[in-house]
Length: 465
Image (cartoon, rainbow, N blue to C red):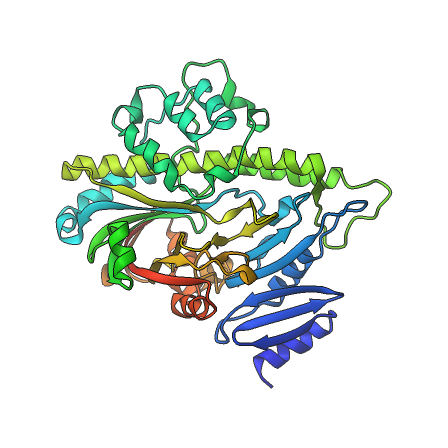
């Protein structure tokens, strides 16, 4: 009996019909449909399917709000509540806070350093040591004022930059470049925010505030990775982006840290508290927000989203400062900052992406592999059936607990890439074997018309907390 037949039988016992054709799984349960793009060799987990169908069936009593579509990309696997690699589209009056959880606006950014591998390789040891101090030992000075936080949340990123104090890190940055790079932040124009939903600690009556999480990567699968341009697939796109063979680029993967947890947890609890008292709780345990409450959530989520964006900006400037100190030049440029754990109003719907990347027509998408596999710069093709999205990576194949027990990490000295971390368990939990191979993930999405790859990057030095 094939793996697919066994899966069909198991899901059938739960009332789920399953069909597979051309790398697409279609699931039906009580008039609820969800689809997953997943090439046959990659594993499909029953729990992830059930989680996706649970989100596809979310409703709110006495409301016309509904889920319009539920899809998943090839990095699909179970999450704590929502499956990773999922996209759920709802009508404009319905929001599902648990669909993105607490890691609000987790995302990736990529910038070029203006340097080649040959130019930096001789300084590799010094580069690692200095970045280790900044990224892992928290040796940074990032002052912010209550006024700048107020400006950030009520007005936006440009207002935040204009209100920053001229001390610490901000003495060495190129503000004109930063203002220009705001236009490279995908989705920034889609969200608004309100400071009333921000943590009160940001507005204490102090001249300077130094949030402990600002400019930090966070644990889990988050990282800062120095990568080498390995292959130019689309010369036209590569030329437009300034990407050349053997160039060093920096990919940053992190989110809103404690601010996202603060807002995400509060609003998941609020959604539950607002459930009509005369109605039974849904069996899935998933609660929606509608009307004014949905709009208030989007304002609160916008606070966390903007914090995530400035967190990635700060990390970028810390890395830039290190490169400038060592190499006495700074020709770096941001290519894109793209969110993969957020809700955007798009095409007349609220698009909830949980570990899925926007892939609108002509827009840049970043799809990383593991720290032992390739990453890709791709161009979105705007496929409406897949809700204008693609995967945000390869996706986990093994749980962290499983990887800790296997202890499959390899000796860094024998590898072409290097992982720098203060925690030995990260080498096990995030070992390449913990992730799906990136090649079939990319090929399936190209074949289905979600993306067109442009540049292939290989890992060189990965920093993990």
